[in-house]
Structures are given as C-alpha cells and as structure tokens.
Length: 468
Image (cartoon, rainbow, N blue to C red; front, side, top):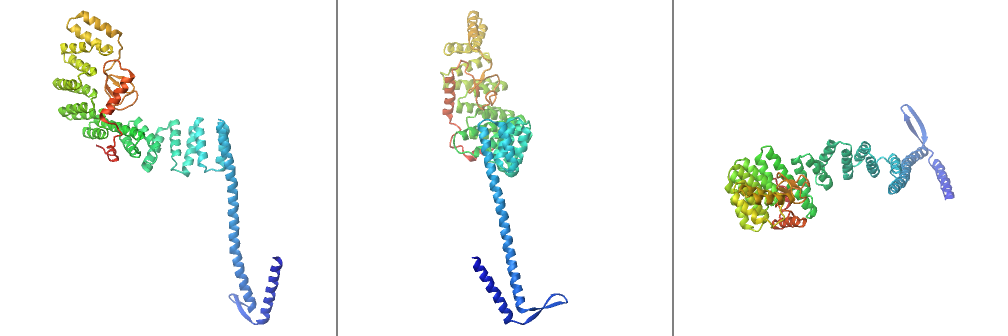
C-alpha cells in the first residue's frame, strides 16, 4: 500500500512538471489593492487544487475529531454505567442483609456519581425517612421529582415524608396539585387524597375526588367498596348542607346517595330530616315509612317514633307499628319495640301484655326486665315486679337502644356512621336480646339479599357522576 502511494505521488509530481513545460504562460494575480504579482498558470491551478483539498481535509478532520470526542464520552458513560450498576448491586446486597448504614453509604456514592439516578434517589430518600430523617428524605425526593414529575412513586414517597415530618398542609398541597393535573391516573394517590380530605371533613372536595376514583374502576370488589364510600361521602355532604341550613342542597345530596344505593338508610333519614326542617312534616313521615317498606330496617321506625312524638302525632307511629307487626307478627324485636312505644304513650296494659307474651322467647337483656318490672309496679303488682327486677339484675346489660351491625358497638343516639368501625349505614335499632355472631351475620345477609347490593349492574358511570 505504501509503495502504491509513493508511486502515485511521483507520477503526480511528474505530471505537474510536465504541465509547467506545456503551459509556460503567466497571469497577473492581485491579492490586495495595489499589490499584483505574476503567477504561472499552472501554479495558480495547483494552488486552487491545494486550497480545495485543504478545505476538504479540514471538514473531514473536524468531523473525525468530533466523532472521537463522542466516542470518548460514550466510553466514559459506559464505564460510569458499569460502576453505577456495580454499586446498585452492592446496595441491594446490603439491604438484603439488613445492613442499612452500609447501603446508605453506597447510595450516597451512587448519587454523587450519577445525580439523576431516580431509583437511587427514591431509595435513598425512603431509607432516610426510615431512619427518622424526614427532612433529608423530602430534599432527596424533591430533587428526584425535578427529573420526573409524573412518577407516582415519588408523589407517594413525598407525601409520606411530609406526614412523618408533621407537615400535613404540604402533603395536601401536593395531592391537590396531582389531582388537578393528573386526576384519575393513579388510584393509590387519589385514595390517599380522599382519606386526607375525609379526615379533615372536607366533604365537598372529598366527593369530587371519590367520584373520579369510583369511575376509574371496573366492576369488581374494589369498585363496590369505592362506590360504598362514594355513597357515604355524598351523605356527609348532605349533612354538611343540612347543618348549614341549606336544606335544598342537602336534599339533592341525599337523593344522589339513594340513587346509587336505595337501601342506604342514613341518606333516607337525612332526607326526612331536611323535609321536616322545611315544614313538610307529613312528607318526612312518608319518607321514613317508605324506607321501612323497602328495607325492613327497624331504625326507620325508631327515627319515625322520635319525629312523630316531637310533632305531637302519636297516631302516625302507632299505625306504622301496627302495619309492621301485621307484616311480620313473629318478629320479637319488632314486638319489643312496639311495647316500648306503648310504654312511652302510657298505654301500660298493652305494653305489659306485649312484654309478658315475649318473656322466655329470647335471651332478653336487662332493660327488658326493668321495663317489665316498672309496668308491674304501675299496676301495683309488687311481687311480679320484684321477680322481674331480679331477672334484670342477672341479665346482660348494655346502655343504648342502637348498635352497629358490623362491630356491635352500642350507641345512645343514631348516627349515619359508626364512630367505632367508621362504617356508614350500619347503625340500627338493637333487638333487645342477646345476639350470637352467626345471627348478626345472617341479619346483615338478609338485608343485603332483600334489596340488592352495590354491585347492581344498574349502577353505571352516569349515576356515579350525578349530584342528585
């Protein structure tokens, strides 16, 4: 190859010399104003060729130099990637051995070597938080979000950092920012935002988040749970409006909840309360009576009794109980509730007859026997009263006529959400006798089977988004 190049160079020189012999003429060449020289024609030709060749060499040389620099950077990047991979492998090994300090040290080296390594920044921040350094975790996770704001893991990690650091307002701001920009994309973030809003009783904001969350799920157990939560939040939104005197908005919220779950007793009771505050007392009574006809939940009769006696219309509740007893004459809990009503209305003989017919049918609580003893005293039957009081002293005793069907918590006043297990729609009238767990479970199943469940296919995306 070298000999060939030398031969080509010699032939080129010979050719140039011959050109000078064949072209002896010269030309005037002005390279500056007032400066002219004479150049042989061949010299001018050779000079032009040399300049062109030099330009080509400069262009190609520059490209080759730039490629060399890129290759050098790629080589360095490959070496750095190899080092990062090795460090990352060591970090995992140390964590598998539960050597957190060693893992932290390796992660610090890794982050200094590769500042935009998201996985390293995320893991390092989580380890910092686990060691109690929430402030350091916040700094690292914020730094990581500069490189990728859409990474949900970083959003959740930063929320946990704020929670541990005692900065709930910053957590709420971050979740709100995510919801308004990326709503519906990640169920975990939306669920966390919903929970924070519920804990602060910001029901209207929680309703907006829960509506998006419920629509984002397909049919299944998770969707049923979220729809049930949606119903509860709609109810709480209605209670908020009712407490603020906005009865029309309250009614719309309650009806919206009933549209999704027609058997949700708190919404129907709330609707009756809103109607009563608007002066439509008879309509409120009808609402509660319709609720009992749909659900057979005695809590409707309990609330109707309170509302009717407050309005001074005892005949309405007496009629309601008579109809209920005719429909289910063997229900001891219903008959006991009717006897208590007779006692409140001073219908002593009817109350006593009813309780005497129920005695021995169930394992009654102490309140049953105390009421029976009091009725005996009113009729001046001291011996029977003493016997009843003695039975009541040995029977199981609890305060409160209401209870939660899920956790069995006893309550004195009705509420839409159990304060113990935080379930909506679980508070009902206690039957008055000692229940076994199997009987409680069967009662809940009967209610569900009699009226359907939240997985009803008629609950579609349109109904989820309605405000009532």
